Image 1: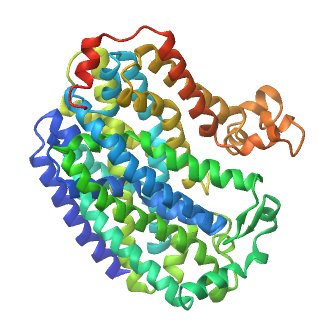
Image 2 (image 1 turned 90 degrees about the horizontal axis):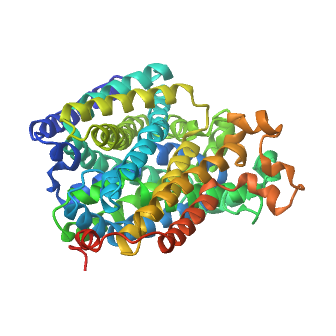
Image 3 (image 1 turned 180 degrees about the vertical axis):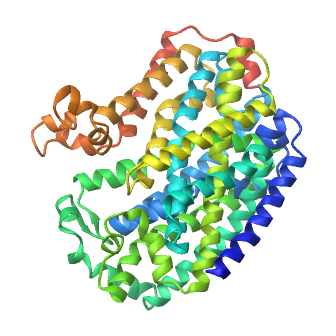
Length: 531
């Protein structure tokens, strides 16, 4: 216990120094929001990766892998192909260039200035400010569960401690402090995950033996999961069953595609000086991100074999039904004490890197995209700091009230909502000069409305908890009214993003041809640096 506390204090001393360094060089709004547009490529790439991969990925999705097994590795593939290559090469360069042409400081401001619409900027900023605290709460829950199990700290006390700690340097230091600490924390995270993977395979007798052992345990899959379609941790779920839809539409598709429209990631493209930095960042991100997600999902699945060998129970039984506790319990009960202390630092790093970025983008959305847009004058650094503080408080409240086993679901919800609301307008705005203001408005509002309707009235996991469908129509999901086993009946397990994103894209393309084109001079300004 004492060694863990000492290690944490040393780690925090470094983090606070980096936060102080960011504070000392933060003088203007551009410094606070975009790190002065002079961030080095390796810092940007590590910050991008550390923001993308957090305790929600390691604890939440690692725990989900403990429940569903190796099929979650398809999400690792998407993080490489979509989250790194397409995001940085296909979106990153054009985002950086267009953001420079339009002097944009935030993701909503980029959309607003591309379409010359204050409504778009306020609407996008409102979605981010209102809903990113739910995603931040998922990350906060992850690190708090680790503190609860590793140090014996009461869960509620851990929530408050982490909130105060992060608020101290995010509110003061801005994006420079966030990205400096992200890079430092990413290095810690990478080392811990590689050691975790090696230790797990060693305990199970090597790669082949480990996978063979897990495959032979298929009969131990809980009966409730078998009824939902699961055949085993290596075998996955039967095609078209409810759990197959959960795995591939919510976890793999929802998060894997939703990463392209994440405001806290997109803004990082605007922090580097040239495309050369983005090219260099692809290599760093392409190594770091798959290591983080691949290890978490692999160890999460293999934890079933280790727990069965050591305690005679599978992972979800060890965690008493709360999959958010699978990875923390695995670290505390299976790994040696010295590693548990180091891993705690790695999870501190993962949580702080992502939470700091979430708090920052939520705060700037309130201050610059909503408040400044309404008032018609530039927001001060003090106003941005107030916005961050409001986001921090909202995330703490959500973390306090959300139910168990919620980390992966809350993360997928925000990723999917961003994709449905922003991705068509963002993608077409970067690549299609014919895209119009009216089309962007219709697409964003339509995608958001479709996603929320599906969430409230169709997708069973959320609709049942919220209860609005039950109150108005007498059923937990409108899809349950269809004949059991039919395609419509299965829609209650289909993620909102599967429906909402195509609807938003069709609305964008159709409305673009039906609405008036934008002024040629403005379009040329948007694309002046894009050839």
